[in-house]
Amino acid sequence: MDSLLDQIYWGNTVRSYLMVVAGILITWVIIRIIRRVALERLNDWISKTSTSYDDLLLGVGQNYVLPYAYMFINYQIILGLHLNTRVQKILAVAMAVITTYFVVRLINHLIQISVN
Image (tube, rainbow, N blue to C red; front, top):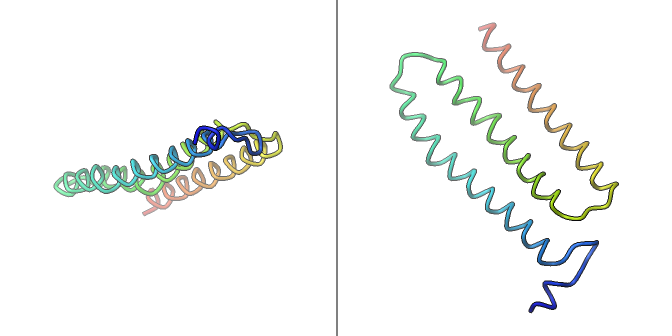
């Protein structure tokens, strides 16, 4: 079994790939738990308050912060692999595009809220 895990493909061992897949799956589970448990409890608590600012913060957290955090953590996990410089550049550009997308969406959301 050790010989299978130590085989190298594209500069990484099978063990490295399995660790990356496990890291992504663990991240997915943790984000799901945060969404399901923590945010639902927070939503129940927030629904009892009279202000709308906390509703705004909860919406920003659910729609912008958690999805971006999931993407950023997965990006960092994937960078743990030994990647070709071209692949690293492609991932860096993709992450920059994703970051820009989330920032623009967040700014658009905040402008819409301030106008209303």
